[in-house]
Image (tube, rainbow, N blue to C red; front, side, top):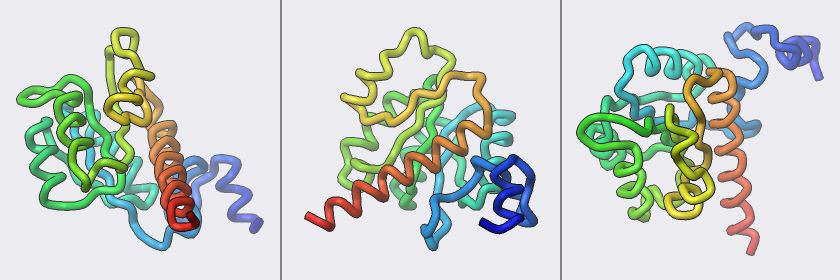
Length: 163
């Protein structure tokens, strides 16, 4: 490990602006595309800043209907969706996404202020929501979670080719 890598591991910024926990999975060789579906502009700004700083390509939709339209026009590697939004909720959007072949295996992270009301295991089992992240949350934790979801997905794809 280089001195620079050790400094980043300890939380220092590297010349590209990344910090520890803000890294795209190793050997990815590509910029992963993330769709944020969130109606709160301040939340979008924080999430977008941290994801872009970490090397992700980020798109944004203001509600579930816009998110659905974006998802049909482009392919995303991860979708971050707010639970409560106007027009179409995060749960409604997720139901639509996982019903398609295109998004059946794309990791979905749900942001919610209702964590105590929602059953994370049920949502994972029925809608394949990988992570239920309670608001408020650490942007660093969200970026780490996105990287972990991508790493798990990469391992699943690799394992399916090995069979």
